[in-house]
Image (cartoon, rainbow, N blue to C red; front, side, top):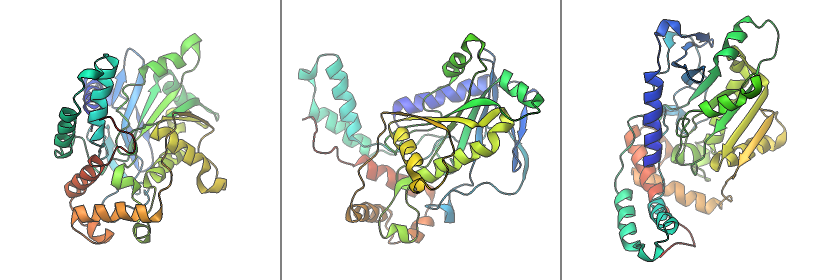
Length: 347
């Protein structure tokens, strides 16, 4: 995880906890499989934060490298969203360290002083050190909902269909890093949506699996695993919104998804998924700097997969499923950290 992401998560966690009211005074929503209590109330922006709502079962054990599964049964304990880590396992290429230093020197007009050797040493040190955030967990398929109080209060009185518009955020991060909290509070979006006495908007942010946990592929992998799991996670979260957002005052027929970089690329794939033969679980989309990778050859995908197994010292996906999460996270980190920059690199 980058330093900026860590800071954002820490600040957002502090803000959520510091604004908690008396638990019993915060509203609850019955989702069927569990009761969700608002984690906090922003008195300045006048909105509730329903944090860390589970939208899928923990993707561990036999559910590693398998499509996400909706929660089942009934959890009788009210969830207030404060007891779960919000971050899926993260990793970034080491060359980002070099790029950040070069960009900083470029902005300052000191590129003649840029020391590539020193930056490379910093990158190599970064590659060799795996230090996950305290909130990192494979059990990360949760989403947050931010609801203006006026919308939530009116939903309890509404006797007809309809509701407020919904904005669903899909984060970027090269498909290897990012989280639902990394971009901070949506207070500004909510405030702008209520300008000129308009009804406002509900904001939803989801987590989805990253790196080797969400994007492994290849001929051998696909015999016992599912490719593009990050997209399947996003899809299930969007279907969850269709099923449950009305309970928070939202209109499932007025859903807009928005994402940048890998988030924008993901939305593009959601629109074109299943060859357009299945309905898309949203009505509008905003793609910002949409990014996706050209499909590599089956040979290249196989190389990446076999390298991952080699780092784990196993030969099959079934063996990998039995390993401790920490071992898998370290292998994921090491492989992505060592990724090459490509053809063009500063030297």
